[in-house]
Image (cartoon, rainbow, N blue to C red; front, side):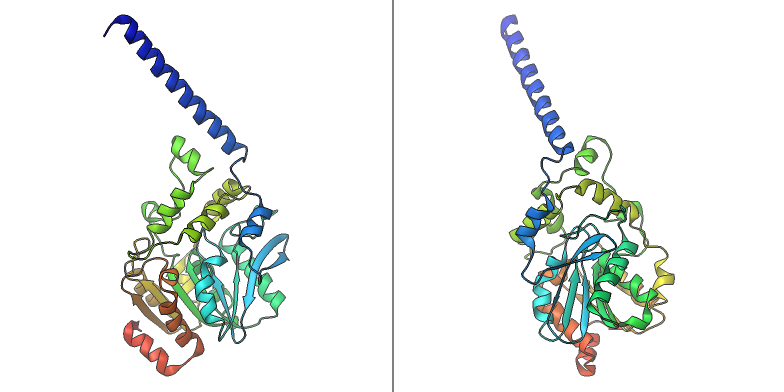
Length: 334
């Protein structure tokens, strides 16, 4: 290659590198200044339902839905999702139950906390506020993933109020940093970007990893999750939520639960192994516990096959002895 050609090539490469660095810098600046975030009023316009209600609980504008008539049951969603993740299951349950679901602290359409408090304890306080507003004294509670921690912690703290407890692929057991699904993002440039911006492709991969083929997250679920996790101020809320996520001593807490408990688990759950179901049942020493596992389903079993999960929930929540015996026969009874 001639010296002049080499200089032109190197000059062109240097120009491209400078342009790429400028683009990355502009992108980082836009992220830092919230240009890629969505304001809450836009999220509400997109994702609130006709049944949506909002309640001020200790300065937090809590989004909740109460539908159906019958014995009350509370649904508590997983991290990074919202009450809308229960849509299909709630549509089945509210034929026979009053179904209450709320967006937990920092999630969905629930507003920012003026005191900057996020995590399990705050979830319990917001849940208590909604239930007090609805005048509910006793109820069943269903929690999934991190929502399961809120569910069993509340059941242990208020045994006189809980009729029945259901844990679906619940988090809350001790784990190493490497096995923690809510572990903080990596350091460096990648970590900086992950704490400030996650594209929809990130959420498609993250959700998809928790489904078992042929099940897959719908485009609507991916888009909604993506949008709700780029709400204004999300980067601060997300980091505070992770910092506040403490499960305490789950063995001691579970021993205080007195409500009959059903533990449901996707047998092919790649996020939380199905063997954890036995640990939950073993540590629920103050009550009776049943386990039901679903082959071919994963961490979001209630989204993958809502009718299958609803069948067992309806049997357990209704107290139908014959139907409960059928659930136990298909799983593990202790």
